[in-house]
Structure formats: structure tokens, C-alpha cells
Image (cartoon, rainbow, N blue to C red):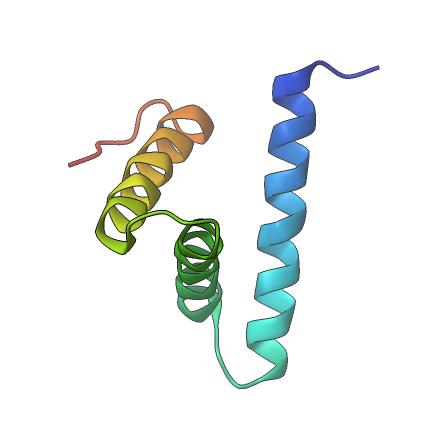
Length: 77
């Protein structure tokens, strides 16, 4: 059985692939898919009672962590 980090990465990759398919089927592209996922993160957090600005900030921090995890040599501002 895969470790928890591997399972998490697989779930994230599956969500990304689904978002790409959805965006492509509705006239968008990868940028649309990425924006959809970021909005979904913020929406889920806000619906759970989070402050919208804090949710947006957390989304950005999670995005930077994801990039660092998937592409360790990438420069993140």
C-alpha cells in the first residue's frame, strides 16, 4: 500500500485531471482548470465558515507548497 503522501499526491493529480477535462470540454484550457480548482478551494473553505480573505491566502500558501513538492527546483515568489 502506498504511503499517505503518495495517496495525497494521487488524489490531487486526479482532481487536476478532472478539472482539465472539464475546462477543455467547456472551451477553457489548463489556466481555466487551475483557476477553477483555486476557486473551489476558497469556496469549500468559506462554506465551512472560513474568512474569505484567509481562505484565499491559505490557497496561495498551499499552491506554493504544492509547487515546491512537485517541482523542488522551481522558484516560488
